[in-house]
Amino acid sequence: MTNPYQIEGNIIPFIPEGDFYFSKGVESFQKRKFDLSLKWFKKAIADKPDNPLYQCQASIVYTEMGSYHLANQMLTKVLSSHGEDYVDCYYLIANNYAHLGLLQDAVKYAELYIEKAPDGEFTEAASSLLDVLDFSEVEEDEDDEWMLEEEDDLIIYQETAFYHLEREEWEEAIAILEEMITLFPEFSQGRHEYHYALFFAGEREEAITMEEKYLQDHPDSLFSCMNLACFYAHEANQERLQYYTGLLDNIYPIHEQQKLRIAVTFAQIGLYEKALYRFKLLHKSKLKGHPSYYRWFSTCQYYLGLKEMAQHLWEEGCKQHNILAVQTPPWKWEK
Image 1 (tube, rainbow, N blue to C red):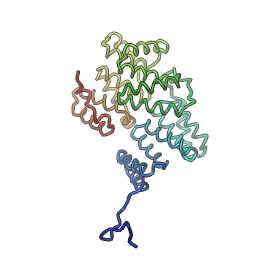
Image 2 (image 1 turned 120 degrees about the vertical axis):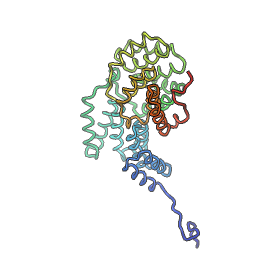
Image 3 (image 1 turned 30 degrees about the horizontal axis):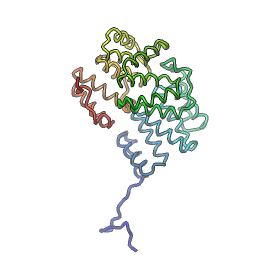
């Protein structure tokens, strides 16, 4: 009987499968070639989409690349499908939340991991993380007493809103954020993102009024100051703009996401020297998942005369994010 896989010359073709792709992904990961590693893991997942090990390893690559949202999205999917068989996901999620500055979420998942795996591989690391978080302060007081009860649902809304906001898809973001605010009224960041999307969707007066009202009720809101600085710059209200930029000048957040947001704010309002200084304080490896990092950092470089560096960074961002690849750099936008 003829072997269907045998071809001329007695050569049997090699047909790669998921395990082969996975092994190549691990090999690339060990060499710290994260982009290549992720490509291999994606091939492995495409071959065996229900294999949780492939998804967990891909999430670790996303973490190394700074794409913490995408990492948690994959880990949450594994937990929903495989539950207690992959308890290490709880620690990995906690670690990603800590990088994002979502400290209460980080504490919750670290404690869940220790509860479910008291003698687990990451128990010591989870305990150390909790010790660090005990000494950390949440930047926005309005969120201090808020505890998530429907964590998984909120994660989905956060990830979806983040996706549209980073791509400046304002109408899509508004629709998601409106639902989020209705379902999670105590999650204040959703309101700030809503005001931001509303402003750039054309409802400027309404956005400013809502953000000013929020700041009046919550005088220590960092997000309100950043939003209003951006809003008043676009409105050419120099008096109000200088007031809020003066406040932001003296604020140096601990967490990378908030550091990035301040840097982006300074860039958006044309204070490129201030923005460049803030961008240089960031850890690039933690922010590769943010198109705004590449968009606005390169813009600062361009307008400060570092045009070759700006073009190089923009091109790097285009390789990381398809959304940038189909856009033109901000310095080429029509005035």
